[in-house]
Image (cartoon, rainbow, N blue to C red):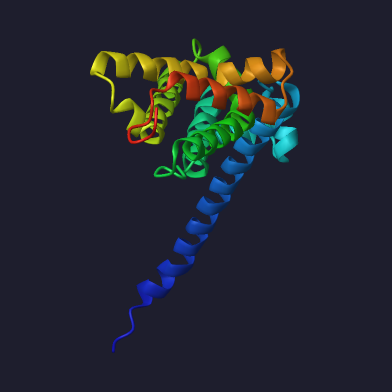
Length: 213
């Protein structure tokens, strides 16, 4: 077989390019993680200098990867949504009513607790970064879809208008804002706040088909 010298010549350059790309992606990810860590620590959107110091890079490195802090906020929101979806896999969908309620509430509570600082930042900056508004709507609609999945037996007994009204009420009940009120304003523990949600959801749902009344 005839050896093609161009293959050998191209390979090192391709490997160097792939290495630079992977390093750049890793830097980008570390900047996003630093942004999230500072939000959790301070409860407010950090400056570029604070993010750079936390991530261990220069401010220039941030703006080489993000056009501005708004773009970084948007990238962080997309990262959080992707991680949140992977972490919030539905469990016990076919369980009995108490099992489904407990499973859903636990998953939802953990997500709200984890992402509350970022949620506040998204709400605060949505007017400056209009794309964040679509992400906020996306998150709210995902909550409704999870409610439909977990409580399908009870929701299926209702005509469409009543079913939609109940979904909207359950969505508001299990919103991140609701979790924030219970935890930060009313001072409830994780378990106590989950207990409030479980009891309220159980009261709002119609009787489960096939159960004694």
